[in-house]
Image (tube, helix red, strand yellow):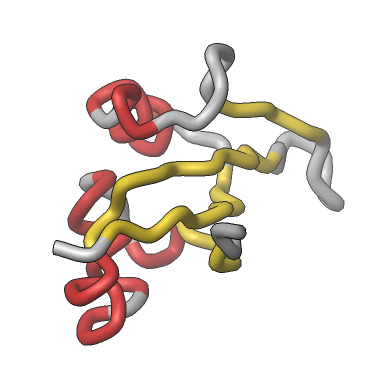
Length: 86
């Protein structure tokens, strides 16, 4: 497995929070994730960076891998970016 680090942007809900706590050993910072106000009232956004994810699986499955990894629905995922390792 080749590791990859991803920045994720997710909708704030109980399913996402539960999924993040299940993979907290992949958090890159002690506090885990940040919640910031979204563009609509009551639609907050979670920003998190997860490390040691499987590049091969992410490359072939894309968003489906992230959803499976966190046990969330595709609609919970807003977007992602790959963190370059220097």
